[in-house]
Amino acid sequence: MKILVVNAGSSSLKYQLIDMSNKAVLCKGNCERIGTDGKYTHKVPGREPEKQAYSLPTHNEAIKLVLSLLTDPQKGVIKSVEVIDAVGHRIAHGGEKYRSSTVINNEVLQYLEGIVPINPLHGPPAIAGIRACMAQMPGKLQVGVFDTGFYGDIPDYRYIYPLPLKYYTEQKIRRYGFHGTSHRYVTTRAAELVGKDLNSLKIITCHLGNGSSVTATQGGKAIDTSMGFTPQEGVVMGTRSGSFDPTVLTYIMKQEGLTPDQAEDLINKKSGLLGLTGISNDAYDIQKAAAAGNETARLAQKIVANSVKKLIGSYFAELNGLDVLVFTAGIGEFDEDIRRLTCSNLEALGIKIDLEKNDHAPRGEEFELTAPGAKVRTFIIPTNEELMIARDTAALIK
Figure 1 (tube, rainbow, N blue to C red):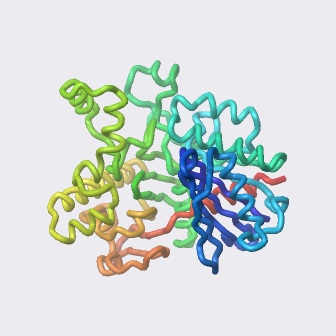
Figure 2: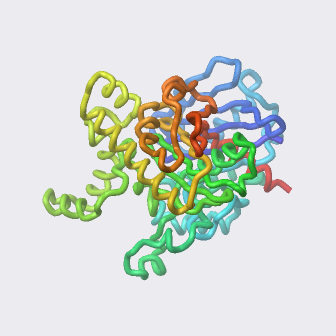
């Protein structure tokens, strides 16, 4: 069984073709700068990656290109599009309706179009990617895998904000959570690594990258998460501020005469690591600057780690204990400074990592960081959202 996984962004379209018989990635790539000058990267294991400029006016042309690359006699990996059994789409937002992966039809598309006001950045490109696949592969099964779906079991007292209740009942303003596919994958993998039934475990997963979130799960179900109505809430991120006193923003708006759009731009694109340091939104650049003695970079690292640490403590209380702590995504997997700062002084919660292992953890591999005697097992687990999407898609093939 072969599943094509598609992740459509506003000006990009990432893809992987996965053979579900052995979970092998047959090829993967990225169509970039859709709508402008266009280019693509196509990678087949064991071959040199192909990178070329290519006119991509819309997502429809991007999908057409992907299918031609997959079936090309020299560059491709399959003889015909017919051998693709289904297409799995990463969809950031499923609103309140879609809490599990779903076969996409016109009813689903109409619903997704209806919730664009609460998902203005990710909704339109996801819909464009789905429609392009439907146009280029008529009759092929299309499945939506929703990042928000993992949070369908969070109780109402954790997702309703303490605003006048009409904002929830009338406008559906609430905590939705994001990165759910990633959290679901590493949670499942953590249970496998410790050799226990997922239903018996309390797990906290830290997806730390340019966008970051922390999720608490009990028995394989999410019970709380740090991102909220949008991906802005929670941990300090690359360019996003994360959580802070909201009246600070209204104060700045009044003082500087900012419009709502300018204020949103400030907390979404000009804050976080970039805003704190003025150096970069990339944690690797901040790590290098900190190692070179830049005190502002060191301060930023402490602020980020503290924002994660507070969530771990909060979720420990909500879970009434903890069995496994997981770090994943770019910062979680590769930034030993953030992991060390986050896990320091958490011995009272049973969390203690081996500092030598932390500083020399292999790149891009599953690795245990647990110190001798620690009650909580701590892991680095590289995420694999594409495989999770492919699994969900395969499960819906009749």
